[in-house]
Length: 339
Image (cartoon, rainbow, N blue to C red; front, side, top):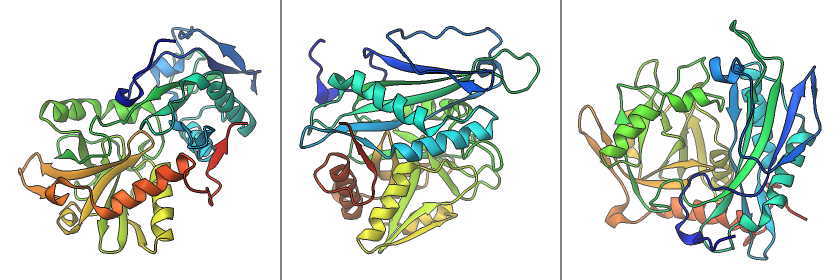
């Protein structure tokens, strides 16, 4: 293995040695298979190619201060993947299979888990796709579940430094009562054009508004949004928002330090009342936001006085990373340590 520059890893695909797979056929999941191939062979009429029967997850493994490898909140990713499977009528994955697949993929590629203190992690990507052929619009009878991994740096190149975002009103990510609340590829496809445009204009990502009325904050690109007002952690509630496991964890930590937590619709005008705002998710952890510019009106909301990350965002980020990297005890049962 060539020397890896751990400190400068991008968030992208990185070839590792093995992935694991299991096929669902005749109503049953097969034995887990280990593969060194990066390729998948499937029928040209597979439902994942035609009708979007595809769901994925993202979680991370960290090298702790004690040298041990820790996987963060794997059970929550399993629950969310099965919620996605139910949402688009795919076969659900038994816990035993999900657990074994993730553990095996990490163990087989353990040399790619970045060293402690490098600011990087091992990203774990479970994937579930419909492989059975259909020409009519109906669910497949066969599925492939696989897990591959790779070392990554921060999702936003700025890392834990303030970023700029842009409010977009001419594009929507997902509709209420649609698929916004589950982790399926179509939601991300819908975000590609506005995200690309924002990047070209110098923004890290976009802030989507609800598609029904265009009045409330939806998601911060591929992440959840949160704001700090006084002693309160506030994050949007909506049927089109994907529930972030990182956001759920930050809410628990906020309560632990004596903060109030509100999960409710957040009008876009409330941006003027927050002292700190950020985007949070597995890939980003927390990305503090220094400014949000409305693309239509050019009105701006500005945070991070003197360019510094807010004190509460910093505290929550430090607390979460300390649990993930074994610097502080896991009092929540969030961590799986590889034996």
